[in-house]
Length: 140
Length: 363
Image 1 (cartoon, rainbow over the protein chains, first blue to last red):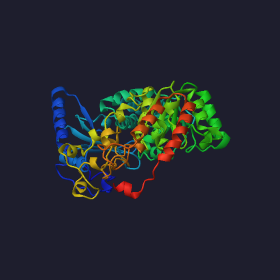
Image 2 (image 1 turned 135 degrees about the vertical axis):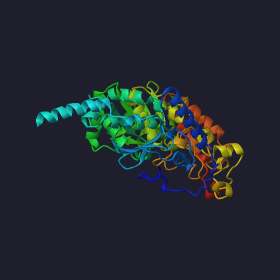
Image 3 (image 1 turned 90 degrees about the vertical axis):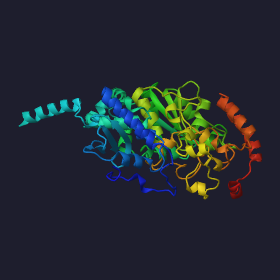
Image 4 (image 1 turned 120 degrees about the vertical axis):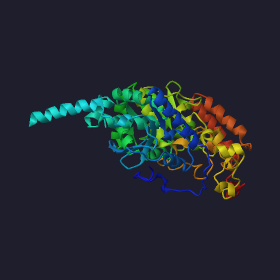
């Protein structure tokens, strides 16, 4: 995932030695995802985890993203800057990354769901599309 | 800037051709920015749909403009610009194009038009010694603050100077600097300290007001709990090293290179409440502790007089008595009395003041 992002937030590297056991945030998060998948199977309810709300050591976010890997679906959304929506190798676990116009990450979520809400066509947009198409046809 | 004032945010965005999907993205980023649970996204969307653009008056007093610099370098240009589209920033003497009489007229007009409804943002402390130390258009900071506060729905004090006096208030406080909260007691005040505050924390608080029309839950010194509810120490990624007793002893020893805890190098993380550990700085690139430097505690009152940035918290500060005097001064309501008090303390503090040398830093 991190290889495909247009902006690399790791451009600045400090001289800090990172060990695999630096902190223990990666494994608990993977367990949280497992529990969320269980909830999705049992109740159909989705879970969203905001990666910005978790204290992560340098390199840990990359480790989480690399562990989750890439699955079958990759989508791009062009709305107020780019967004990338990627299903990980674990079906039902999605990474949603929002960028601004300057290609900076403004938020990143792990969504455990069958389909992230932002990919669905929105009722308001569908209604607006209907009116617009009706007007376009009236013009021609 | 004052166009579309009667439109809701939802209407403003739709009139700009922004789709519902974009709006959802905006809400997701907003939830993240406000440190709210992603489960709140639908509620934020609902509230923002009907939110109206509040008028904002921003006053800058004794400050270095670092807080405005921080805000305008928030690195989330799209989202920030939406917020600025969503608020009507009627007066900000650094950012506005108008100057002189036109600028002051804009402030007065905004105050009159939106009396009781506008949001007052203040950065910088207020000098109570000689009003001439800091004036805008010939108006003393004190007079401008009191006049502008009258019709404000709420006041946001941005930066440690406005919230707790900050660096101008530091020993020997030559200008008799006081905070907004020292002078105003009859309005809701949200303290957003930091030197400067994290950009998204400033915008997060603005957005909270815009979204819900209320002030967020505050701690005992007026800070929004959502950003200042946990100590740097508790959220620090180096915390496991503290728990194991692994410390850097100098800035270049083996412990420093391995990224161990900076407590012994003077880190104020255990007594500092702020969001740096998770929000980070410069587009989430890093933050002081990740860069290998101890936390200075810049979001706490009197951080500048805490007894040395490189002294471990376990060592007593030398000016405990003086800090107590300043704390007592902070509780006095009348600003004029405060100014007089600060003046007398200033003289004694000036006599006791020792210059810091490079040797002191290396102690």
